[in-house]
Length: 142
Image 1 (cartoon, rainbow, N blue to C red):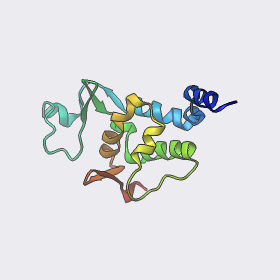
Image 2: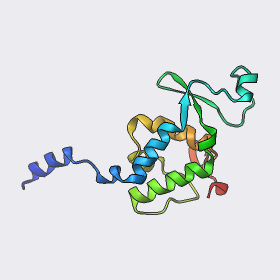
Image 3: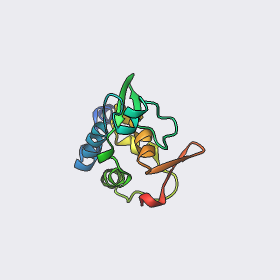
Image 4: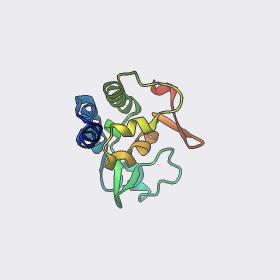
């Protein structure tokens, strides 16, 4: 096979790591982490959707549509568990549990349309903290 054939073949080759079960499961988890419509928890209902003073956002807008975080399945420990499995499966290395989260690496195994959900989920679940624009993994999440 000559160089041109190799290059053309690479264009159509899909990274097989993207079809590994933990990676597929993590993408499904991201899709299900948010429900349709604004948050209807007791606090949001009582405040008529005004989230002023909330430590973490409840309602998000993705693709121009309001969505809400599903609290029951998106605790920091749940998010961390799903991420660790996908990370290990994709990178063949353990997820670093301190320092800056390598979001670009996470995006490599997350479907492009789900990228915008990553930081909001990681922040709202307290898996990470935004420090000067960098997402730092929180020690209690480890």
